[in-house]
Every structure is written in structure tokens, then in C-alpha cells.
Image (tube, rainbow, N blue to C red):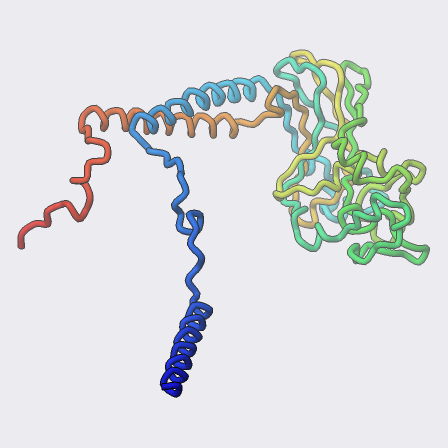
Length: 349
């Protein structure tokens, strides 16, 4: 009897141990309402009324915005003038002329004001076929060096315009080296018009990206001059032409702000522009443009915003009308189970 009892107790112990081992090896997660997605939830029911109302609301907002944007863009006055092909002598090729130190690169152009322009009038230069977004070009700069005086030697990313025999180049890199250097002088009714070049760069760039104690060093002192030179007595935070240029463009055709004319220009005014055609775009087939433009509440002349608003608003209005006609002409009960595929009768063979 004692042996049987001992055998029974051993069997019971082995059974309990095997069941506990099975529980430990189970990968079934612990039950919770969160893991089983049984928590109360609000499910949005897309009814015809909701859909039609949404499309109508979007159309009501977007169509007036599009019309207002187009009207504002139409009120912007622009004078656009291409000058790279006009400022060349007939005796030499374009590349020879622009690279020669002895050639006269000054030329004049006359612009007519066909519509009154209220100040401030913004002056832009536009370059075509100039890829500032090229990877090697964009990387050829040192943001630390531009901001901190102690990082003047941080030129590892600036090749090939990194250092000279005299020391590091500040600012280094191809972006700074290729700084735009054409200049413009404006004369209206025999009076020279002042061009305001203050606050043409973003305030965040002036205050946070370019140091007030960082001064140019060894800039454009090599054998190959890329573009404009900088004043060695002014810190980089005050050299706004450089700051504007260093904000690289995403597309090969871009405009950059050159300055502002604070006064007004009247209808039929003739503007004489004296251009110093220094910047070499002829080597890569680029073009140069001079733009005078007013602004509106949406900025410069830009019809894309208005057309985009009108397109989206018109599409939503069209869909709303279409759904209204469908809802009226061919109504269907909401949540009708007869429309489910497994409830539809299949055709007899």
C-alpha cells in the first residue's frame, strides 16, 4: 500500500510539472481589451451628406482664394530684361570677352515702364541653367566656419577652394567662390536712383548662420577668380550679397534679390540701366536676366497658386454636383446588406 501511494504521488507530481511547463512554454499573449482591440472607438460613417458637404465647403473656400490670388498676381508689375546676349562685342567670342581682364564689360540698356510701379520696387537677377543644387557644389562649404571665428580652419568639406599658401580661405568652398558679381546702376530722368541693399537677406541667416566676428581671409586670392570679392573690413553677417547667394536654389533657373528701389516709378518713365557684365555664364550656356518687380500680399508675380486653388476648388465643386445628382437620381439605402457580394445572386450557368 505504501508503495502504491508513493507511486501515485510521484505520478501526480510529474503531471503537475508537465502542465506548468506547458504554461511556461505557451506564447499566447495575456488577454487585454487593448490587445484584442475591444476598446470603445468612434468610427466615422461616410454618408452622402457628409461627403457632399465636405466637397462644397472646400469649393467655397478654395475658389475665392484662387480668384483673389490671380487678381493679386495680375496687379504685380514686372519688367524683365535679358542682357547677357546684348553685352558682348562682335570682335571676340563670349568666353574670351568675359575672361579677359582688359575688355570693357560695361553696357547700357533702356527699360520702359508701361504701368505705374509703387515702391518698394525689388531688383532681382535671374540665372538660367545654373545648377546650384549639384551635390558636390552644395557640399563645398563650411557652415561652422561661416558662423564661428574659432573654426576658420574647418575647411575639410570645402575642396577645391579650401586653403591657400597664406592659410585657410574664409569663406571657403565653391558656393562662396562663385558669388555673383554683376552690378547695376539705374538712371531715371537724368537722376541716379539709389539702390537699398540692406535687409535683402533673411534675418535668421544674418543672425544665426553668419558670424558678426568672422571676416573674409584669403578670399578670391588664388589663380582662378570665380566671382565677386568681399570687403575684408566687414564681417560676414553684414555682407548680404554673400548671404543671399549662399542660400542655394533648388532649381537650375532661379532669382535672387539684388536690392530695392524705395521710390515709385511712373508710367512712361524710361530707365537707363548701366550693367557691369562680369559674371561668366557663357562657359556653360547660361542666361542672365534683370527683373524689376513690385509685390502683393502673396509676394511676387505667381499665377500657379491661384490656378492651383481654382483647380482644386473646381474639382471639388464638380464632384459635389455629381454626387448630388447620383444621390437624387439613383438613391440607395445606407448600410443595405443586399449590396454585399456574398448576398448577391450569382447568374445561373
